[in-house]
Amino acid sequence: MLDGRPLIDVHLHPAPLGSLKVDWATWVQGRDAPELRALYREDGTVDAVRLDDLLAAEGVDAAVALAEYSPRVTGIQSAEDMAALVGPRVRFAANINPHLHHPVEDELARQLDLGAVALKVHPVHGGFAVNHRALYPAYAMLQERGLPLVVHCGTSTFPGALNQYGDPIAIDDLLRDFRRLDIVLAHGGRGWWYDAAAFLVLSNSHVWIELSGLPPSRLQTYYARHNWPRLTQKMIFGTDWPGVPGIAANARAVAALCPDDQTADLVLAGNAQHVYGIGGND
Image (tube, rainbow, N blue to C red; front, top):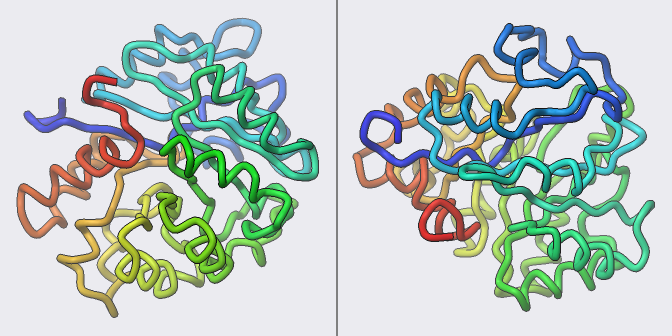
């Protein structure tokens, strides 16, 4: 709980150092705080208990750690690595890359069996279009099981990223072909596509904006052309930790932008509970 309000962060990157391609300073976005170093064991893996303690200190009730298979850009943060962190607060999201995994549905099923609560795809780091037909069997599995798809929607500054794949227009195909699938736009169109992301969210009940990597002080500027009270009701809190000053500080800043307490409750926890099925009695 943060200030008496439930808090869920759906976007954490607790990466093991041994399989991380970028250097530490790049990974933490220049934020080399002692509490980050303290999370790691001597072998470069994150200690699950220390991570849970850090989240508790930040007021986080539940969080989602993200697997990623992007050897071209950030390296490998495997499903097994993320599953090892699952505990009182932490769940994890699967990741598939059609250049590495075939058949994709078999790999997704394997990661779901490890306990994944969602699938995140990273077109920008993986180098593929989100509407690539090779991914469709995985999307069908998600829809059948009632699990969300998280899509990296926006630019990335990591070397090797292919930002042309961050355009949310390709998601329009998924909305037509998977009408019951909840789709979460991680980073909310960061860079060039805020308007497109907001349009998708406001025009479809199954699309959500996830706030990771977006400074709260700029949110109303990014989405200035859209109905802010309506849009906030479709937002999900996430930070992109560890590349942020602090989870609690971000959450308080986001809550202050919400038009009322009810909306703040939705953004900080309620929408994540609904879409990811976590943070309640999961």
